[in-house]
Length: 262
Image (cartoon, rainbow, N blue to C red):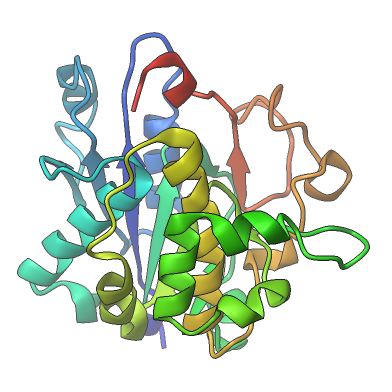
């Protein structure tokens, strides 16, 4: 059973000296909580990457690769990470694969058996956005954005968009049995811009999680909103390291892309 709890973290990374980096704190927590995990940091061609490489010189079970494909942002980094996993025959060594931004950071340990295995979760987001009154969130956007329409048609979910929210920050977890299915859905997607493409990723990833989880959309620990009264913190002002929070993952909004850091 212990072997079935093993995790692989694939982290989409972009370093800039203009922004506080949380990657060391993130990695240290992973290795503290899940000692048998593997961490794959996929860097989207950061300047000054040597600053990050030097931090992890003596770390085990960690690999940093550079995403030299023409697909960047989270989706491109995740695809590059999956290609590394498949090429190096690592897929069946880990039960679940955690995909996240470098500033959506593991803060507290979650019980893999309780939160994932016992619930038979095959795909879930970290947290999701849904309207409190149950009405569809961004219904028209989901039906008209070209990325969303392409993906939802591909997985036959265009008529199901009222059943899932938004996979906030494009951060999610997949069971090993769904990695190839996921990759085959998104491998041809190249996100060109932030607001049309990157933001669409949060929307169509929610549909993919719904589809891969046998048409049921869930989030880790049932965090169902980014509203402070639900998450328990303000994503704009949170101090990830020092604030006393019970959340499994904590997000610090930095808006790197809006400042030219892709």
